[in-house]
Length: 93
Image 1 (tube, rainbow, N blue to C red):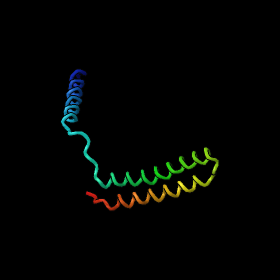
Image 2: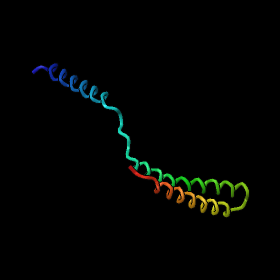
Image 3: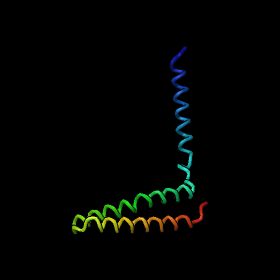
């Protein structure tokens, strides 16, 4: 059995697969609901994390520990849930 025949067949299949991949339009857009879920997750993580870091830094700098940390964390949670409420009002496709 000739080894070149199998090698040529494999090369042809690889070339066909690359051509088929090049013809595709690229990644398909994700559904809006998935994007909304990602935004909600980022609000739940980002806002309290940002408020906590800024509050901790201000407390350290101003010597008001732990008051600014607590105030900014509470404010961050309020803002996060307000933004989540706004996201939930958007129409999903």
